[in-house]
Length: 476
Image (tube, rainbow, N blue to C red):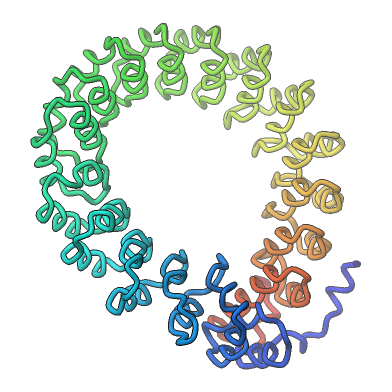
């Protein structure tokens, strides 16, 4: 369809106010449009809750709004509470109401692990629940507050130590108690290692663990940013590869140890060294000749590497190393031009995605036959509009998606994509800032219900926040 089709739509077709939009939906028969507007127009409830099939679909549909889910859970003739509580969009207020009036024994476990469960509800459950299965769900919920964790620790000391030791809200005092309660058994080591990895780990626990002999504990210790230089020096010679690899990435690693670990027998250690920001020229030159291709890849991605060394790595036999050079943010333009002619499309595609790629390079690469390369050209901000308009009609969906994702793509470039055969592309255009509301209004008759739902939901949000009835004259 031509762009003229979109440009000639009369403005009167676009509802200018929320009541007009609701009236438009009431006059039609679009079920999903009614679902999208239900949060701002409860009068649409009679339409979307009329059949059992529709109600069951809404209870499991991933995009169902929280207000619709709340209404579903209150339907007297449809016991949908368990489905609503399990749904990821259910609001905290709805969850709290169902806990107070629960009759289903499965509800507490579902409520305990829901990401929207209010902190007050989680604290209440930590104080009242007796079922350890439910309480384990509660302590595994990353949103559970510290007060609820403390309550659990007091009520059931030792029962949930493993889960508490890993929780990001666990207090330093509680972690110290748990650490002291565990011995040198295998399970105890796992718990103590989790405490050392916890961001709230007490300093005293770290000091104790630094003198331990268990590998699992020392691996966690080696990753702590507050580790002393003396302890770093000692762990740099530890026989476990994982410990030395963690030390190799430590920001406080002395320069002498950087050079030493660059010659380590473990590939993992040398890879960690290759990505450091404080490498010396001698160290980088040595790593550039490493037998492990991943070491050379990490080095090639390192922005501190000199242009001279990047030129050398650009000749590497491994295509992933050459690609890493092309992805380096400090890669010089002249080298990018060379890599743009690489025999491997995987390398050329990295050049196409590069923010430093010039317009002339992208114009030449637009004639490439590889999809990966053309997708990079499509998303690059320096690609000229005539090229983008051509790529918008490409057969491959990845290329067309690149045009949609390009923030520099103009309205005229994007208009034909409103009829793209892939529904996800049309859905993405609903929130595209380059298109006007009038342009997007053409999606109201889209064959895919997800696109129509997204359009009406987006438009309702715009109307609620609009300060002038002629808002659709503006660019988004």
